[in-house]
Image (cartoon, rainbow, N blue to C red):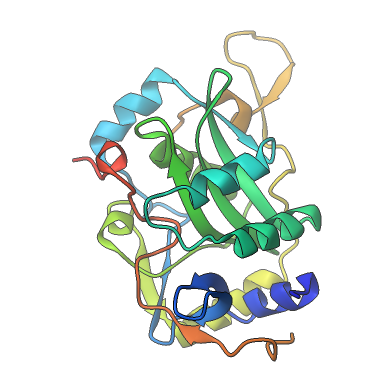
Length: 247
């Protein structure tokens, strides 16, 4: 049995969980060389064509309104590391307040979403999916904006790939990552604390969450031995042609 406190302690030391096909069990993984981060500053960027989608305001982003559905969406990808065992772990982490879903909605349809853990000022990206083209990329852009507004320090994407580079992702030595992680863990941050602004069209004092509007302004590790992961990144891997990187 997995223990939530032990899992959180493992993530706080730079490890993450994945299903291992060889052992048919969930295992600890790490990145012994370099860690991929998505910048939460001016280095963040996205394909020019995505700006047109953002400008059309086709989507609304919400947090934790359909966590189980996001887990199912991520697990249903053609290539996934989320087994039923890992899905149940995520649900336990969510119930304990550690795991969150950042969702992209189109009307009443869940168009896509991102799955991750928050520890202090760190968002650890675990997976993402889309049911509507570009939805997961819009979700990533809006997640970055929300984390910036909430003063998070790190958006951990774990392992670099070409897709992540299109969004300004960069790699740092694992030792440097662990130092930055230790600092960020001490920062009291909340994914849910609302970021408020005055609705421009109303001219009134009513305030809404920017994340709801879709505005486009610009430990105990003894249970398993940690493994080395050498496959694609959790959060940034495009899943099919409809959600591949744009120019």
